[in-house]
Length: 356
Image (tube, rainbow, N blue to C red; front, side, top):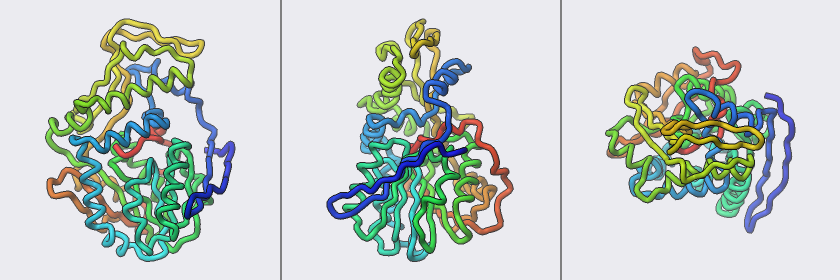
C-alpha cells in the first residue's frame, strides 16, 4: 500500500526522547469501511475501530479484571522467562511491538541491557504518544522509535523506519493474533517473516483452548467493562461520523463458537430501527447483530503448524501452570514458508486489533 504521508517529530520526556512517526496510508475512510460492513450480511465492523483513546483506556481496565486471565498468565510467563528469551536472541536487540497499546507487556523485556531499541506500533496516535514517552523516561538506555500506524495495511512501510540493530524481535502480545481469521492470521505471520532477517525472532502470545465458561467470564465481565468497551464503538461513530446510534437500543453479546474455536463479540440491536451515519442510513432488525471482534483459541501444535507454514521454526514455547496461555519464540530460518505473501488478507482491516 502506498504511503500518502509520513510525519516525524522528536518528543522530549523527563529523562528520554522519542522518535515519533505517524504514517498515513492510502486506505478507505472510516465512513466507507463502516458503511460497507453494516450493509454486509452479517453486519461486521473492523475491530481496529474499537481502539480510539477511550477504547484503549477501557481495554486496559479489562486487562485488570479478575476473570480476564490472559494478561495475568502472559505477564507471569514473561516475568519468569523473559531473561531466557532475550538470551536466546542475543545482544543489541531491537524489539518491535505491533498493537503495543500502553506498552505494558513490552516494558517487561526492556530492563535488559541486551535491548538497544524499542519500536511500539499502534493505531491510536494519542495513546501511543503518551505510552512511548513513559517508556523513554523509564528506560533511558533504550532508543524509542514509536510509529502510529495501521500496522497490518502499512507494515511494508515500516522497514525504513527501524533503527539499526544486530537482531530484531517482533513481540506480538496478548493473543492479538487470535483476532484474525486463520487465513488472515497466517498472512500476517508471513508479513512478519518478511520484515525480519535470517536469525531474527518472533515472540508471540496466544490463548489456548479451554472451558467455555472461563471464556465467557473473561469476555462478558459482570462489571460491564467489556460491554462499555464494545459499545464505545458506537460512541465513536456518533462523534466522528455524525451518526445517531442510540446506545440504549444495543447490547453487548459474547458467544463461544465451538466449531471455530473462537469467542465472538457482537453488538445486538434491541429493536427494529434505522440509524443515520452522516447523510446515509442503515436498517437493523430486532436481534440483528454487528460482529465486532473474534478471539481464536489455539493448541500449541496447531499454532506451530501455522507458524511453520509462514517460515518460522519454533525455538521454545512456555505456558502458565494452568495451561491457559502460551508464549512462543519462533525464529526466521531463512527457508521461507509455503504461503503466498502477496496481496492482503480478506479482512485486513483487523489492523488495529490488539491484546485480546
